Length: 470
Image (tube, rainbow, N blue to C red; front, side, top):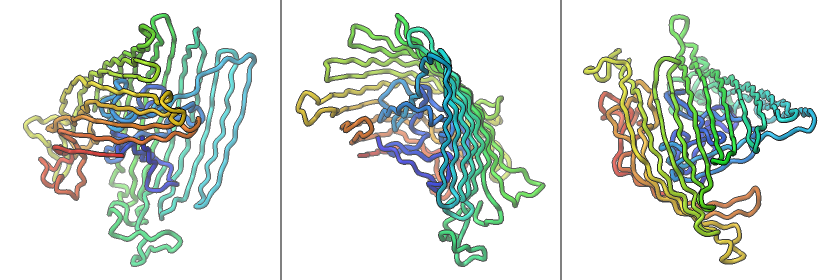
């Protein structure tokens, strides 16, 4: 897998724009201890994952699953899945506490400060962490602030099991870079030049002081319990996010653009060893993604089964099936050109549509350790799986509703070469081919896709799309 960490500025600590094998976070899954971090809504309806919800000091390792070949993760995971595994609790012979203070300062008045307290007693472990970040930004009017507070309590259970509770609060403020054109009256030579025509009119003028304020909190529960019937894993989460887009030009008579998003869900999974060479994983998961508390946007339910079959010490085959049942309440109301229902034959603000499908998966991996000493820690793998999801880029945009679109569907093939050089250094080469019968995109307003779409909707289905990556 190839992961690119990109954003408007590498110094701006906002929702990281992460890409995995050519897909952004709306088209691959980020999970925390196996439970997906769901996200609905956001600025212009973007479903980008907020990585401030991840306690960085608790990360044990990151598992990378390239391509849509795991039945354990949802169908929209075209690019694959990142599973962030946190540290398991340990037993303390006597009460212990440790404090950590990390601080840094860099150019552009960038400062990052973190204080944390960890410890425990007996079977109980705890973590308390506070972070404060600020940067003036590389571009004019691109300053950013972040305040993050997290706490985690965990308890050891019999047979090496554990139970944990994680709570996180986040307060963010981000300004939007404005024009810095030598031909304008507000040019400042201490910042890089940004020409007038390259910036949206929404935040072109620095006197508008355009930006976003975001407040979010989440609560997660995780349970792992080995038993005679396999190892049970259970997780549940609740998250609330609100954002306010602000511009000074709105004045006292106009309200800022506010959004409120609520999501909650759970997952139950059992991993059981059968006949010494089959590890069967089966379970179910669900997620509800709402606007505020009362208006449902997406409801998902899935069951899955996957077999990790160790055919020989070197050859492993992982087939699986995932069944998804998804209901999306597509927006049917628009204020463009005057308030009206997009589909006047059904005058409801949100129109539900139900989708379901069985998605087969397959992945085979061969370890070449025994072929030659030079090939030690070298694997070659092949994945072939179906792609299917109705959850395209933007389910909540009033002007982006896509109820008339069929789900994105097709198939994916991945040939992967992986070499492990050390505990911290891996090399992965991935040749992939994706063939989409229908590929739903969120069309930019300047494109013909948008201008020619029904009711000026931005959800557009493209036929016969192919993506080749290496």
